[in-house]
Image (cartoon, rainbow, N blue to C red; front, side, top):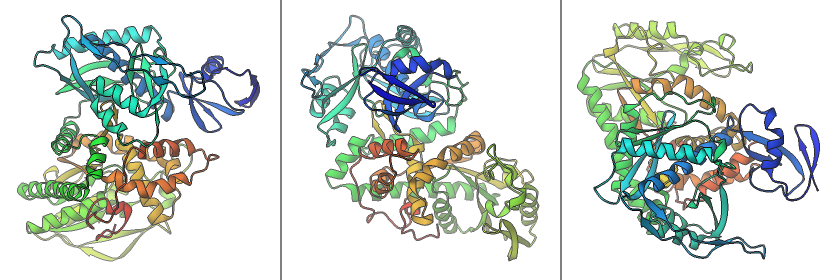
Length: 584
């Protein structure tokens, strides 16, 4: 018997009891479907049997890990449906149970054939997130392929059938070489490349309705727990629309984000033109000794993009305020410095302004739902004073600017005066820079808005995208530890609050930007790995942040490490790992 503590109750369960059986017993106490279990702080898939005594908790689709599991399961369902509808059918390889207690072994791979009248898929690629949807593209084996709208309609119906059938997800442990062979046989070459750089001898793969795939992360128990969804054509591909974490049972209305799509598309095409579309490609380049050239090419590309933005500002002629905004750890400070240098080459004189200097005094700062100071909302800024000063500068007046003392929580005036000449231009960095409510008194033609974010170009493989949020979290963790002595567990703990602030105050305004700049570096996770891993290993099993630390460690394990020595001192990455030539 196993002794478990569940919600303060002491319970006993016989050996062989699965987490799913216990979850069914407790589901009525939860508003949303249970997706995972957590035993002593370690996440467990529901189809697994209980293996230890301890404290058992349940993770629902409204929790971060549970919602990620939901999304992963829905992608798997979609992949199964797409390959089936396209007519590309796989003859199933046999997996035999090894009764000696060793992992299951793959006996042979799967041959494929095209069903009569079918249109075979070469591959399906999940590329990036756009609002509440995941964008993907389909490569066909021939130029003759079905109309995308009608094809997706058939796929959608097949997905509904798979979900209604409540089919189980199975996890199988196979040799890593065997897994690579399996995915080579079915044309999933990015997974094959990924496994080529894995040190572990065995790998977990998943099966749904006879279809095998590999996913980074956990799977639901069965298809029946998956919620409403939609599948629609979008630009050059399709969108898989799913509920957001805050409303896991409701489908969020999709709002097109053309500018975001374009910058993501441009970044992906550039990476693919270098043969660096996924982690396997990156690892191959590192192992072949071409990382130094890769770094130089990436940095040159970013400098070229920054120069283009400077030229657009100059060409407008009447810009006096460059407003820069983006989520945390996007590299806004380094970007501002590099943009200012490019503006100087055009004869302009950029002057920095920090919106943070216009914080209201600490006692006037709004509180969040937990009674803590909320520095993320617009009401934390003295908007009236900001507009008064900026308008005066625009009129050519000499203005004394404030400086916020973060120790005393007071705004101070220390004789810092500014006056705009004909070539002067203010570079204003702040969380609300794209929101016209911050700068309501300034003429629109005097403002040039820039949205900056680290929009990762790489994917793990065809079906596993790299979340831009993960990249920024790792950046933030490394910087916080270096500059503030903040433990990784504290950075992880405050991350949900940071994300809420971004969702409310930054992302709704991103399409209002004149330009978007992608600050992600194709090589950066290989460099950040050496800084982040020791921090994450320092998070103990007893910490609430342990599960997230283990997830990030597993993620970083996909990457070969790269020294930071070759990173230029003006790189955005230097803002996080140190050694920047700028004051960041």
